[in-house]
Length: 84
Length: 190
Image (cartoon, rainbow over all chains, first blue to last red; front, top):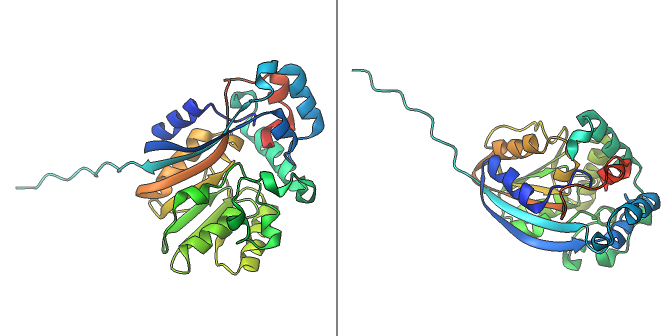
């Protein structure tokens, strides 16, 4: 989660990498209770987040998303001028 | 966010957490991101590892004969589902950083009776040729990478023109979490 992007940054990164038609197919908000149920989230980390995050973020830290995009056409290779 | 740590430090945290994670004591199946009908297609040993951020394969609308890459395949639940969708005429490749996960993915594919290729590699340096893949899937992996731009450029490199990428991942509403949270090892891998 520490490496998670905002949705906007995620979309911008995809566009920069050469993807087009970026669509968000699914959004599922998650909060601290959801993180507590993850096997990779120990109780001390959830307690730390409860202590340090403003209360408005406890119910919604972010969103789990599914993004779809299409690879843009690669530019055609330059053609050699015909020799006369 | 990622510039608080070196790439090697991030990788070490991710390796440590996922090497030791115990799927026997994880959250109830009812809150998994997979539909029951898709979970039912997995062998029990693979379904136990079906805890991704989402179910990208459900949105990918895979077609028989397609070549699919699963970036950071873990123990392979998405790999198995993709292999079933593309059928014997297709080809599914999984790449993961952890030898333990690669071994689990191979075992789970065998248990499911599907033929896949699993490679031990970094998702930012894919061992695939340019324009060799129709669909790239990834489930909760972009957020684990310290080099996201490189990862996404690699995904684009291996995709054919007009190929699709379907990524499930966590996003944050705020740009930054408190530093103490960002530096907690488990906050990287969760």
